[in-house]
Image (cartoon, rainbow, N blue to C red):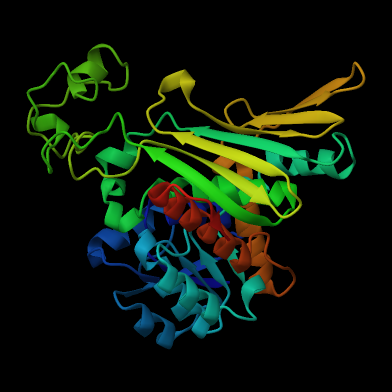
Length: 389
């Protein structure tokens, strides 16, 4: 099986490793990337691929015209997801596309048009929806353990939130903020669990910690403000986050930028309320300055007969029955495989589509709905209004 990649970054390198676990005979036959050829060849070697048999391109259209592969995986920066996805869909090839599938309305509509009638030949990078925690929750709901699911609240407090302010993610022009960059995962699995149609959203964001109070372009390793909790000195001495103190000015050793810089424009917390067609509603909230053991990501689903709670931090699903003294706790062990085991399922679905024997577990329509919900949350946050979907 020969597969091509557009944008072989860290994310798709991990996904490719998951693919090779399931399909050792798969070959990375073409890569389109902006990195220098030698750097790309070294990356291929680290992935166990032969750089001599992999065609290298910098132009995706040229790569697609050359052909010789059975499917394409796209892992570029977010702003290019839609454009690259359109090219692959127009070439009528199975597509694995990272989230978010678009960062503006125009790109979303263009991708939607390109994928009309091909939605099931696309796998969107939504691994959370196919983790064992979510699948067990859906199983409990299907067998009637909680009655009709009528109320849901979900949370995401990543203890690695610095990455959204100290790395390229800080570029709001690229990410368009943390609804599209982060919540896109969670809103997707929430709708997937409930199997209800969302019809309106209201949302609010705050930026009270990483407040853009420092000049743009500052690097932590250059800074003399050693009392700042983000400074490497604090992280070595008191945070237990670094093994050693980088030398001042050594950006190669410590390339993080100032979280408080005026160019780190992502919001640092946000919450939204989702109304569904049947009158029920759900709540989602995310915060990016929780740290260490305060980090968690999970959900509660409540019906008249019971409550289900799960959290990826504990890898457990808990069922609390409301009208009898009988509860359940299921432990799920993903063995360290990406995103709680979800990446393996996404890759399996992509391979099945290439083999012509399956439908997508996370298709283009799912990607479209998630972006629409995130854009509605962005609009609501800016206008203080409910936004209809």
